[in-house]
Image (cartoon, rainbow, N blue to C red; front, side):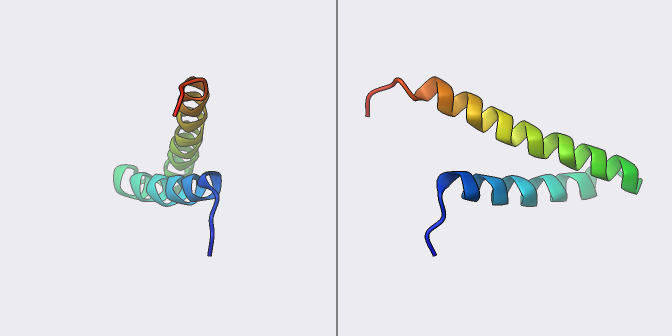
Length: 58
């Protein structure tokens, strides 16, 4: 199975955001909102870091 970086990032962000939401919030509505917030934050930060690193030579 060959995953792209984006798919691996999405799976990781989904799992981590779910765990964070379940262990930090008590109400299901709060858990959902926090989980979505953390998931979107992971993806946004990954895009920002990737965009900043793109012009760097490798």
